[in-house]
Image (cartoon, rainbow, N blue to C red; front, side, top):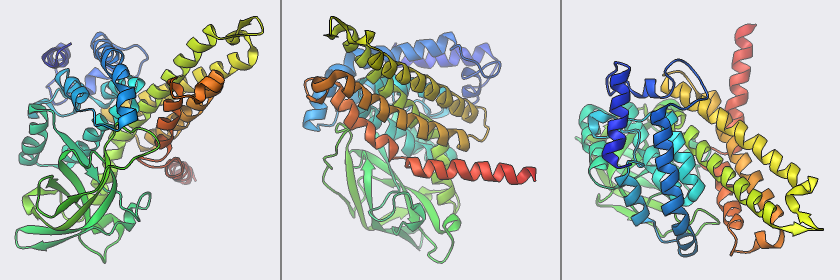
Length: 418
């Protein structure tokens, strides 16, 4: 399906339900409430991503894992098919998919390679604050350009000393006339060396609490004073471009400020309600791949006169994989669906992120175990899955942070009943 065909599919769905393009995502995800059957258009989008993953990503993945080369050509092909920047509204040249449909795409791309999928998904994270808080001019300028050519963007929040503790970030922005002067260092920035522009969270009021101390900005990637660090060689997801970014007296025009001064923390955290279900869906994709690889191998490998899948020890491992994969997918769908209905999904997004990321790690580890000695060898696919899986419990909020969010929601709900 070409990019234009996907756009036509979404617009056709909008017309069918008498909606505008802007509100289309509220209807494509679940027309008559929550359900388990994808509609025809959702199936078509899912199948497009599935075929691309099998035909393009899987064959290319080993090369990018071994060399760390950025998958520019793969991303360009995905962009041409409409599989990148899927949630940019149609008013700004995008196809305006909801979080639910984006999750369908994310799972399929991640099935092929989560490193390549992460590079693509980093655009969504950077764009989310602009979609949430940007004015019309900002959206036309920065979202619009993403639909005109296959550009990349990055979300600059994490710092060397501030990961889970976002409130501890020290990068600052000082107002001088109609500009802001930014100084500080960000770390572990996905697409850091490839970004056309960055969403940046910077402290603008050192005396205020976290909720009012930060402001969000859009910073052009070619701004003087930006130094891009070396590409980090990580345990897994090596196709992704992860770097440190240093800002030294970088001038940012006030017109690039996102929302009101002091609202940056709220904007940055709000983006996670959109992106955490998508990260979780990617983890589901990896877990599904691990289960499929392990199942195929278990059917072919024979010990003691029969296929190892006939041994209960192996069969039960596969059953546990299926239980966790299906459970993770369902909570991802719920979190995504809620967001598309403009309902608060933070609690479910955190459950999805925690469950799916840990499912991915367990499935990958068990797949290696089922492969035995072959699983430990780089000639077989599951060792890469195991390396790639680990980061899911760390980025976009660690599993511990998700449990903190979940437990606080439980406590708040209980207090309201007293």
